[in-house]
Structure formats: structure tokens, C-alpha cells
Length: 221
Ligand code: SAH
Image 1 (tube, helix red, strand yellow):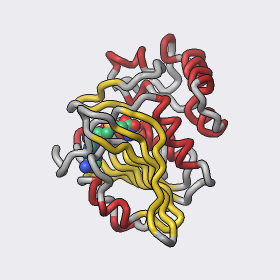
Image 2: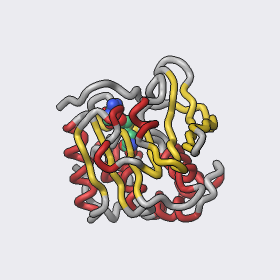
Image 3: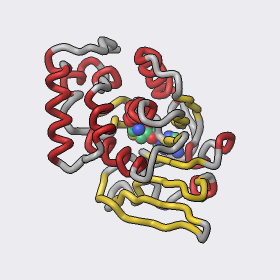
């Protein structure tokens, strides 16, 4: 794996700065999110052969049919999550490359993240180690069931799309908590939703049309 955090050429700081300007133009306004994305190397989460494309605003393959999310989507979901203040901890479902959890770990005190493919989790953990992140806790399991041990969560971010919001994740959302989740079928339209839990129940807001890999059942190697 390509583990030069500094980066050169197409992975240099100048290239990263250009991506941030683009995110800003596309409407990302949270300066803390932009600063963390500016200073987090995305290329280390991607195979060396694709690393030169790490600072394009596009999703890229990470193996096993999965992708690292597009930077705009990472920024957008993070911004929405932090909109009412910084939660004490967050549950991410779908660790994938580990990039989104790395971004979250620099903004939120503790990150719990669950991935169903152990091969991806191994690589993600290595990236977190190289970056020196000590507040990301990972688990190999089907994240549709959440991570009951640390529930209820003030924030939940789901980075793979179910056709319906899993009941367990709703149950594990704290009152006053926020869940950002893409919902819909892989072939059809998916919509990014913000679900807020109140004393009275759940409130749902539709944000953007999005395209995520599906949330699948079961944990595999
Ligand atoms: N947040 C990731 C995005 C990866 S794509 C990143 O920053 O790179 C979505 C990930 O969700 C894939 O790795 C996929 O394996 C995982 N996933 C799909 N269904 C899942 C489930 N039920 N439980 C946990 N992870 C799941």
C-alpha cells in the first residue's frame, strides 16, 4: 500500500487544496470540515495504482466490489451530522476504506465503525494506524444490527444504502440524536436522509439524490 502521508505530485498539498476549493464552490460551508479534509491524506486509503486520482471529486474502487465515497458526499454527510453541534461519539456503518472514519475521528471524540468485509477492515485499520488515530474503534460484523454495546448513539452515519432504514439502527439512536443514511435500491433512486429522534418519535428530512453501494446482509472475509 501507498503510505507516504505527505504525498508528492498528484497527491501533494496543492492538489488537495484544489479539491477543497471545489467542495467550497459546491456548497460545503463548514470550515472545520473543509480544514480536516484539506489536511487528511485520501491517497493512503486507495491502492497505489489509483492514488494519483485520490484528490479528484469522485468515488474510487477499493476492492471486493466496494468504493471509497466521493469527497463531496463525505463532506456533505459530515457537515449535516455536525450541524447541531459536535456529538460525543458516532457510529459509522460501512467502514470501507476507513477514510470517512478518519475524517470523523478528527472532528468527534470517539468513532465506532462497523464493516462486514474483514479484508477491507484490515486495510482500514492499517491506514488509521499510519495516521496515528487512536479514537477509532472497529468491529467486523453486519452493521444492520448496529453496535449495541455502545448505544444509544448521539450520531449514526451509514455509508451503504439499505432499501429501508434498519430497525436496530433506529433503536440505537439516542433521543435528540441524528442519523444520516442513504435509502433506496441500487438500480433505482437513492435519497440521502437525515433522521432525528425526538421524544415523540422520528423526524425525517430528505437531503440529496445519491448513489451508494448496497447495505448487504451478513459478515464475510
Ligand atoms: N465509509 C466508506 C465507504 C465505503 S462503501 C469509506 O469512507 O470508504 C460502503 C461499505 O459498506 C463497504 O465497504 C461495504 O462492504 C460496507 N457494508 C455494506 N453492507 C454492510 C453491512 N450490513 N454492515 C457493515 N458494512 C457494510
